[in-house]
Structures are given as C-alpha cells and as structure tokens.
Image 1: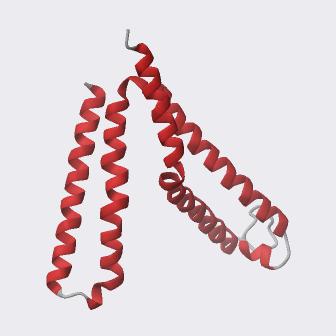
Image 2: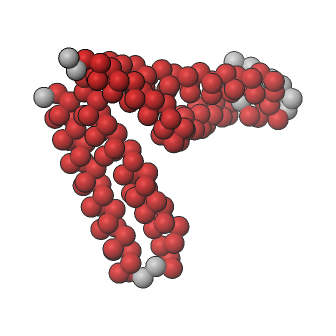
Image 3: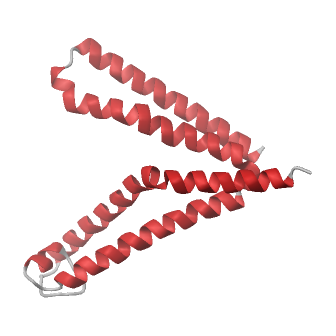
Length: 163
C-alpha cells in the first residue's frame, strides 16, 4: 500500500541531490581537477617539454598543445561532473528504501561541515594572529564539538542504514 510513497521519496531524494549537487560536488570536482593538474605539472618537470605524452601548462605557454590542453580540460571537467551526477542518482535509486539513513548521513557530514565547521576553521586560520588566546580556544572547542556531532550523526546513520 505504501510502495508509491517509497518511489516518491526516492524521486524527491534524487531531485534534492541534483539540486544540491553544485554545492556538494563542485569543491570535490575542483580538488580533483587541481590535483590532476598538479600531477601533470610534476610529470612535465620530470620529462622535457619536448615529450608531448603529457599536455601540461608549460607546453601550453610555449604554444605547444595549447588547444589540446584547454579542450582536454573541458572534457575532463564535464565527464567528472556527469559522473558525479550519475553516482548520486544511482545512490538515490539503489538506496530508495533507506532514504532516511542516507539523508541523515548527508545531513550530518556534508551540511554541518559546510555551514559550521569549515567556516569556523577558515576564520581561525585567516585571523589567528588578531584573535585573543581565549577566542582561539573557543573557536577550536566549537569546531571540535561540531566534529564530534558529525561523527555521532554519521555513526547513527550508518547503523540505521544496515539495520
């Protein structure tokens, strides 16, 4: 009798993931792109620029392989984002009977870290010199409390998923 509600919840969860995809996936995608670019740069330094096996920023600056570097970067970026969208859609479809546990997990890990923990730690990193020792201790304590809440929430969500 309630099977239609499970399908509706899975569809709504997929829509939620797709709507929140730029907020959650974009930092991860940029991190992957940056690390690939850094490894490419390291590979170019290990080889001479004349070896076109790896298209790198140095080769692009010399005019060699510039179009290939830009085109391959756009293709890689598009493939990475499409893959992330397909993975989240597959999670939503395959785990449609465990929507609550997945929503709890994403809520405790992603959203608390993006809204409280990371801004707190970034503020601490940027303004540590101008903060009093008491303010530094307070910021670290709040960040640690948030990390603890995230860990407990993630643990409970995983237990709920396999229960």
